[in-house]
Length: 365
Length: 229
Ligand SMILES: Nc1ncnc2c1ncn2[C@@H]1O[C@H](COP(=O)(O)OP(=O)(O)OP(=O)(O)O)[C@@H](O)[C@H]1O
Ligand SMILES: [Mg+2]
Image (cartoon, rainbow over all chains, first blue to last red; front, side):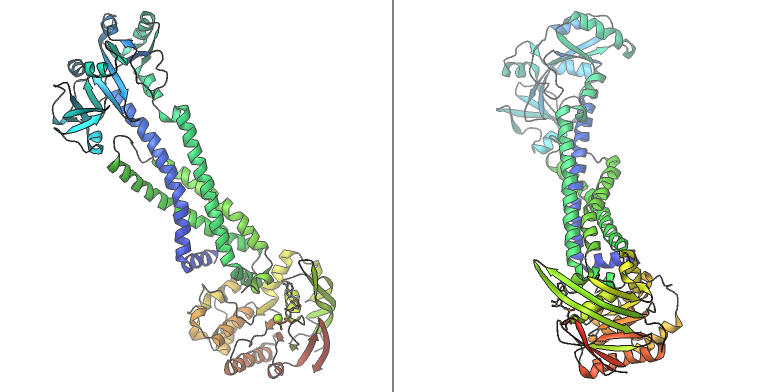
């Protein structure tokens, strides 16, 4: 009977019901998109770093944050010294330059890069040949609407797109190492040196050796570096996520509360009638709570659907800058938050309505 | 009928407080209603008729005085106790029908039956009442698809579905034309005669008042006269 009353109430005012569901869906989408972005960005960066096939990374000691791994403070010449170490098979220096965060253009030595990583998979075009050549991965190309042969402006220079590469191998945009070094006034310097050992089992022995050899540099295993790329572990980012999630919850709570308050006001008379025919406080409260929960479920489902729309938009418009994935493990979390919010948000107006004097309600025109 | 009265009221007073002003609505009402009685209540606007009903139905507490309904002292009842009173002991019929607009006539009655704890199974005696009311064909409609007369008959069916000891009808014909008024009044009289339903009815109309066994006249929050049997 309560279910029937709630259903008929929702059906009786479809616009208000839909509006409320939409308003609840808003924060749900917001939270899911944000979570999708932080997870997506982390995964994407981690995948590309793994794609390099390196075991150890040597960086300048000031390169403390994983996010800003730009600048060049490591002498190129260290590569040779590192390669002389036992168990080290190969070392490769690259220089990074932040373009528009989180996009980075990387300077590579084509030959060393091919040897080290096994080379790019070309979707179109070829590797770096001329000095103004640039390689773009498919998402950057899509976002910049560039194809092989077209010109793109990066770092205030016009570059000629020589090739479009499959994503996932260390870089999003690549130019020649010495060109970027000159542009950065960092001749002979690199941002970091990737190191490959002969056998992964030897990583634990090589790392301390390199640390001893290069006391003023940061030596990390690739696993450590990748873990540091988890956006959720970067302090500012996780604080930001928390703030947005909290905002979403608070916003959702207010929306539910207002919406139920509206519903209760509109229904003062009906609640009075119910009381006159013998409905007690619990009955009225149950109706309002159930209605809020139904709207909460509706809002969660719609919010999840809308997060797919956000996903589609980001994938279509800015695939290189932002990587978003659908994080299904967050669905129940967001659903739970919404339900609690709906219950809390409707409790006050519900209790108010239930304790309302039926007479006032009945004389209400 | 000399059994114990279903309603027994002594020196009932009710004062509403509106802002800083005290509005006395009832100033010492004494009334006894016997089981099976059909009592009309008349009086000028603002004389406290509706207030009296709201107190009898437990919708609002009295300021002072003694009210006994079916041997229960209203003053001793909690909020839950008053809710129980409205479920099983008192049925309301209003001037403005007050049906739930979202629900069909059938569901309006079903909600009241559900609240009264009644089973949703067939009830031959209630079916008889529905026949008496002449609304069996209209049960599938929502209130806005029903005429005023039909709505009021549904409201009466809803009020008596749990067989309350007392039916309180506050100007049940106030919004109806002559033909529908007559039909509703005859239904109330039938109900009273056939099932022995105790009925209290507020009206402004002396013709309508004549349907009752006796008439109570109110003025300025007091009963000034009782006429008839
Ligand atoms: N909820 C309320 N709050 C404040 N004052 C009220 C309230 N209900 C009724 N009153 C006042 O109490 C007095 C009696 O009102 P009541 O509604 O009982 O009169 P009535 O005899 O039913 O009048 P009518 O014939 O117009 O329906 C009036 O002065 C009215 O203004
Ligand atoms: Mg009145």
